[in-house]
Image (cartoon, rainbow, N blue to C red):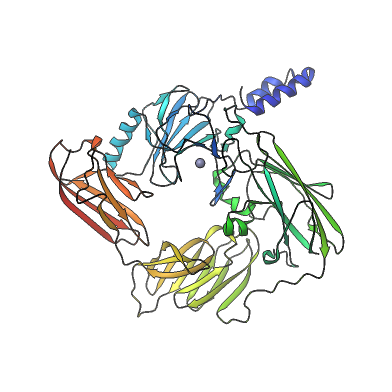
Length: 563
Ligand SMILES: [Zn+2]
């Protein structure tokens, strides 16, 4: 019974012994009884914690630093059977999922490799299915005891440096905070709490983010006298590392009355993207600033809210609003800050964007209805439920290939559909939609679906887009010199694609399919000599075909003396 929640129940039963003697066995049954040991036999220093904001979701595990290197033995945190094995060049990379007797499971991601028996079993299936990416539920028992080596730590998938991502999931597959277990992780550093974000609301109930104000703790800040939404910047750090992590709980009082309370304890993959609604999206998307809102947007389904006030907050002219915020980490370290807001009616009104321009169309969109924007051959279809809150959305056309769907700081729950009219004089193939930033730089590429006279694409990001053609096939060549063979006998190819990205890589040896392991970060595809498809010292014909996302192909072939 190492889980902290269970310890609370012990204290509880001790305090109320007489009454709870009968009830306690039932109470204990409801607790998760899984015991966990550390999944690595090195000091556990975290670069990431449970519930911190990542791209478009909450982080659902802890990231354990591995001293900048790969290859530490990864240990089963409890007895169990491997229930899932996944290999992917993206996301979690090489991942093992172990199921435990109480129905819960633990997840070990970004591994360098699996234990030999699993590694062999997976490779047979990769060769059989002629695939690198694979997601398997083993039909044979890979059973481990707590402390057994299940694989080696790595940096596979979308990992920014060597570490182990460790996750605990309950029997319903909901990720839970691993720091509730007594793992040897110390944290004496309280969260940092910064400015209070004050977002004015107009008479239609819409946020006027353009005139949002940051109020400093301790100061009296003049704000527009009107209804407001509030949020606070807060992060946490753990002992031994400077990495920015997330806070565990936030409690807010307004004028001495409870207003808001949330705890990031159990998450739900089905709604994890709603982090975009909980975070103040403008400063998150614009600068990765972690501002937690104290209001739940209508479309937000997160299971983290303990208390939400029914009251709208209104700041009156010349009157004072006092906001007290307490942020805690899971170890109970806490930091409190107070803010004083004073209503002012002399602050300027926000002026709605560009109604003077004929190349812009603006509409009031809500989460409850479809919204269509149409201008100069560009059609934007915003589905019902695509927005988290009501917003003014606009479509602005700059030239025949560039347009903006805005505003960029509006988070989307469902992808919006864009249809672009392609004139008959334009080439009709290889089109992608690319994001354009403030400076005019383009990035990313969404492959367009080609219809007669038009291009369709879907996106979950509002913002500026430019239509472009990807006419350049991938670059494909041996990594180091004229031959792909390297010292240890592996074959290594360099593959990259400038616009739409490498989509598919296939290789054969004397006509027989071989497995190339694709590492997009290093732009390397590797045949491992240990696969032993070849005979040692033989001369074989290698053929490699790489395709990008619009289907353009590059080929490399050559005779290679194998080691
Ligand atoms: Zn992680």
